[in-house]
Length: 153
Image (tube, rainbow, N blue to C red; front, side, top):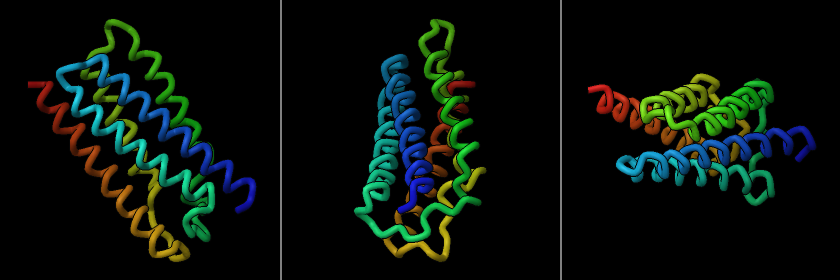
């Protein structure tokens, strides 16, 4: 795996870990919704583990990083956004609705940027796991939307 590919994957791992940390902090800040946030955090941890397996060449991922699919700047922008929001979460006036809006923005960004879109060159195992990540991200978005609707009532 070339240096640029490794750097992109490491950045994606960092992003997944940042989101996991945000969701975990939300679980602490909003105890009535703890299970909701913990389930999201655990899924993000799973995503980071998958990416680590690729970075460590434990699974076949020939052609995994397509520069059209995984551009560095959107990943960096999303990472800065989530880290900033993690800092904002510590403010007393940061509400559950704020946290859910951040989660929705993150999950939407992952879908809109098509980070998990499968390419022809991916191995069958990688295709299956990327499809699962895409499905989980879509499910996360739906869960966040449902929670938002519940909180706005």
